[in-house]
Image (cartoon, rainbow, N blue to C red):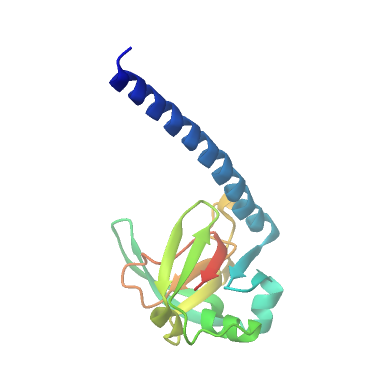
Length: 172
């Protein structure tokens, strides 16, 4: 067998093992993200804290009505009435200082992620954790909904930073 053929086989074998290991690790992470949907919780990670947030925490932080325009999928823009908590209010309630953050990464139970800049987060009335749409609580993914929680960036012109099935926020 030629050296080049052997090198290719070794490389393919190494890549196959690496993909298998990463798939196992990712499956565990995906199970953890999905389990938060069942518990109707999500977590917030900062440099030094991990906080579990549930509906009661959101109520205590101050759920309010807000509107945002949903666009996407080639459909016309639609103004939607939501209920939820401004991320700034939730973080203030939890004692998280947002004054010098660079970004917030939202992770969804389906593996989707979205990054919102610190400036967008600090912009009052822009980034929300939605709990209900048009007066109806957000259903879980398994129930055909977008929740139970969804990150909504109200001033996002194309809804591209929104994150359905919110499972985790990483604040940096």
